[in-house]
Amino acid sequence: MQISHNSPSGPSSDRFIRILLDWARRIFQLSALAAVVLFGYLLYGLILGDVGNWSSMGHADRVRIAGNIQSAIMYLNIALSVLILTACALYYDDEVVGYLMLGGAVALFYGVPFLFEFLMSDQIHLWEQSNNTAALAIYNEFHIAALIMGVPGILLTLRDILLRILMGVTIRQEQRKNMKYGGAVKVEKPPSGALIGVFAKCWQLPYCRSSFRVHCPIYLERTKCWRERVGCMCEETVIRKSMDAIIHREEIIKIDGENEKSPTESTPVIHESASKGGQRHVRIPHNPNLPMSLKIERCRNCVIYNEHQRLKYQLLAPIFTVMPLLLTIWKFNDFMTVLNTFMRSIDNAMSHLALVQNPHQTTIAQSLISSDTIAEYLIVACVVIFITTLWLRLLEYCIFKLMI
Image (cartoon, rainbow, N blue to C red; front, side, top):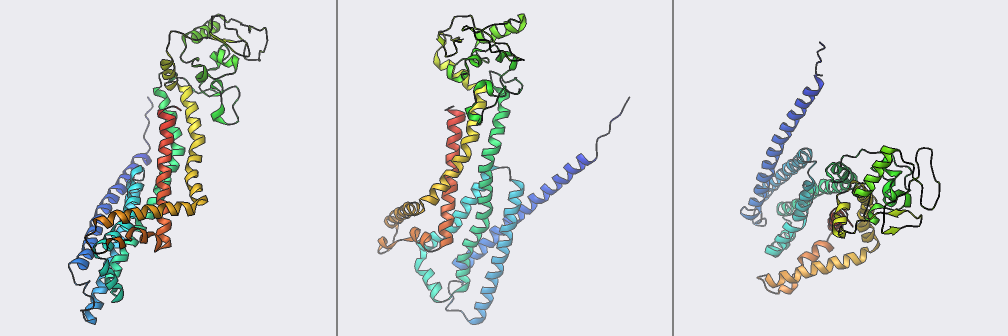
């Protein structure tokens, strides 16, 4: 009796990976706690401490407080960097992580300064006039923290978009096993492939069975089964006739007398009654007792038609991904006009809620774009990524849900 031994490299490597993940999880928790504590320390010094009373402090106190603020900011950036890296390592396969980082970056870059400008805009001008380096450093730290979160957030979001294109089609291939019609059919090499996969006919796809194909009226007519709403996966007449021809080795000839035999395939004729005849005089069977809604449902649950939809998605997904970016570059000035109009509408809405004098002078949202080129391009990138994601989800819904 032969005894097989498991290779020790497998279990040991799995154990090593588990140890790494456990340590990464602990580091993630500690860095998150450190980031929260340091953020709280900075906000405490700015709101409740004497950081805002810069002009009334002596030189020694200014140096001490500025040093403490700079040290806290440095450690905060380290904690945020470690937090982002460990989050990427632990949750890299979760598509929502990139969007959360991107949303957090936008909130820090625009939301927090917006609140500062809205709640105490005069105080910020006083900090600038008094050269309050400590308060301004805390204020600018929100921009730095946003960049620390935004860069990996954009990369993870782009990765998710790319995986939707590359892995989405693979997932659809795996789902074919659950199809009602043809789920257990093995992949076969088609007789001749189309130049572009999405334009292939049903008998040019890898799930068309060669033994059935030579006796299939769809193949003889050189048409598509989803166009005729009948095929070798779902229609009993086609399946029965093909099986009879295989079992009894019938050699069937076309109705018009054409003889187009290949070395491996005989040319059949369909003798049963049909409701439609094509250009090649091949009669395609149709079931008049079956409503069109059920015929459409058969196509939705057919492995061949789902393969056709997968190829359609594979062709359109890159186009839908690049389209928002190209349109933004082509119509960048128009895009910025629309964005400024949107920001102006936010300022108008906030001016009605502001409990200050001259609320019509509130231009916080619009100034966040026009004041900094980096901020302008950051919000443009976020909007483009958001539109691209929605565009791809719409494409997935149309192709795989609505089956358009």
